[in-house]
Length: 193
Image 1 (tube, one colour):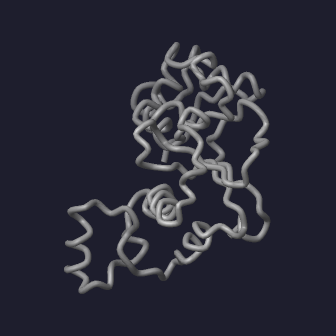
Image 2 (cartoon, rainbow, N blue to C red):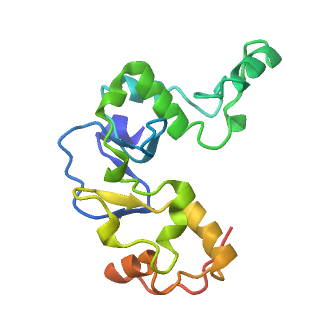
């Protein structure tokens, strides 16, 4: 809704900017990885007249249907078991109203052709996010030339830090260095949900 009203870009709070977000295109999004199967929505800009934006805005709290990008095996089961009605949006599962819907609708409309390469924002897949908190695991020099930022996958980092680093940002990690660069205090007592 914010994009429809203002034309501004959405930026998740766990994006670390490497340079100003001055994009040449009003379509701003990137593939999550080199396989080109998911477009992430942590950094997202769609022009106000985008067909994808119009489709995304149809999803409301009372939406009932088949989740976008449901697996090949899951779609027929959902269709048959609900007599074609689908399920409430609250049961669609992780990512269904985010990257999965975005990817499906961008592909449906052909607007996916504007996708930036993964390296522009997502140099690491969420499964490799531990490198951001592992001492020596990632360095700024690892980012691609011309990258706009890095997505830290905050929920995954919180889980990893809770399990492996006593819920603290480890010294010598990229995240600790990034926090120091922007003047953030050292966090030793992070509350993990």
